[in-house]
Image (cartoon, rainbow, N blue to C red; front, side):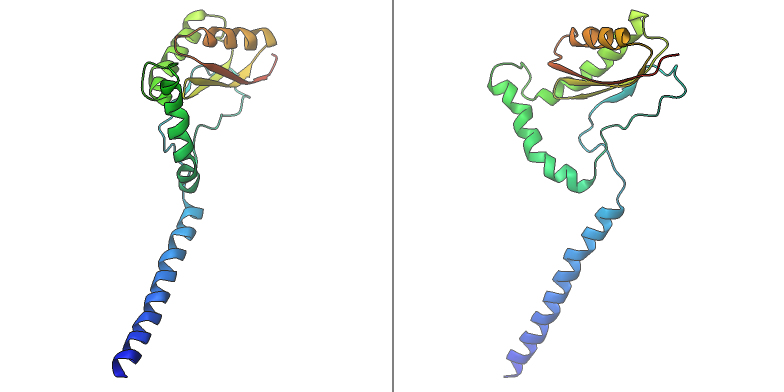
Length: 162
């Protein structure tokens, strides 16, 4: 009888302790700063438009990172399995593509009066920031689309004329 009562009390404390351990991480996730958990490359290339707001990089919460882990693994390796990638994961290209995009934009000469950020994920390049004309926006998109290993370009540029 004594053992049963002692076990019941310890089990009750065990459940309380387990409950506290489950609740503690939830509150710390809410206060957690956003981070670039997957090290997706994100660079500012030009900065000529002072009124262009800074662009958000690939920063997410820990909970979002955990939710995205599976599908990123699947999407990253599917291009290799389909024979469209030479590297075993599409995300491995990004560390090379984004600096090449930066170099191409700076070398071109038509974009010195812009404020542009580039972000890469699985051979896709996001163009963010501000340009002076729709022609600049289209030219940037074409330029980046022609970089080796780029699969897609997502143009999120905003037009801010002089």
